[in-house]
Amino acid sequence: MKIKVLIVDDSALIRGVMTEIINSQSDMEVVGAAPDPLVARDLIKQTNPDVLTLDVEMPKMDGLDFLDRLMRLRPMPVVMVSSLTERGSDITMRALELGAVDFVTKPKMSIQSGMLEYTELITDKIRIAARARIKARPLPNAQAAGTTALASVRNPFISSEKLIIIGASTGGTEAIKDFLVQLPSDCPGILITQHMPAGFTRSFADRLDKLCKISVKESEGNERVLPGHAYLAPGHSHLTLVRSGANYMTKIDQGEPVNRHRPSVDVLFRSAAVNAGKNAVGVILTGMGKDGAAGMLEMKNAGAYNLAQDEASCVVFGMPKEAIAMGGTHEVASLHELPGRVMAFFASQGNRAMRV
Image 1 (cartoon, rainbow, N blue to C red):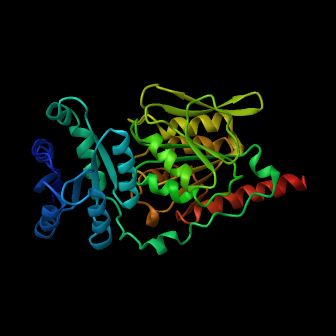
Image 2: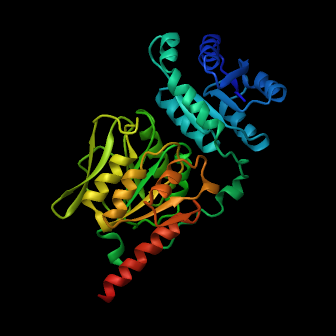
Image 3: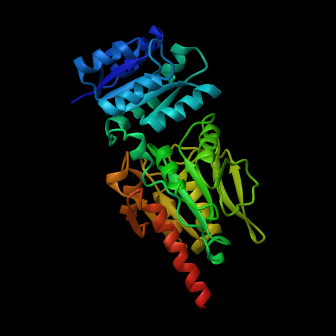
């Protein structure tokens, strides 16, 4: 059966181009196109779409208000269609927090030719969204449950040389947030690669920095990796870990995409295998595809301890599934359990070091 797509965008041009793109695919079809959320609400009831594409800024009803209501009352896969502006990136981050599966950036060039060039990207996002595990958005008090930070690290052996290396893709923005908010302010240094285009990673890092006990920033490269700090790969570059004397340092570069991605999780994981070895813990979270699986196996072979998010808590159980199948993981746990598992592992290693 074809994936049924409902387009919501106030631009008649965008609706037309998106319809052309989607209907050109053999496995999907447009079942409706709405100029605003009020019309979309009625079309959802009439057409029962599998995926909704939603413009970030909408007339008559704010797009975020519409998404919030939709994810509470009629949860479904939503792909945001966003303009690359500072305000647009902030709104997109909020949309992902509200439950959107992913987003597509509107090209700055001629809309029609630009969108047609984006055919592969747009249709891939729709296919992934159609397979996503969508849950009803919890009430605010329920959402706050389980986000208490873990106890501070009291064992100095835990954080001095240890690192947490994280990779994620579809659904990863919220998974990374849920992971990081539980960590204490003196946890080991963290490097993160999340598949995300340039222009959005800084907003994402700034949002995390405000929510977490640790400090979070978009990596600029050549930073000393410090405990209680997380460094996010910028959307335009690979992030790698290097050594400089006794210190771990970040490095960014614009090498060729790996597994079609830049930044790539495999690139980060492989650098951690080479330069951190047994001092690293790898964490692979929700995401489509296989990026990170081979690099995680290299980390394991180098002595790292690796964990994967389980299927039940993933939006898309692609990257963790591939890493597990390849034999690169030691533990599989729910997203809620992962931070505690990571810190418990470090504590066990620290206690062992003190006994020695």
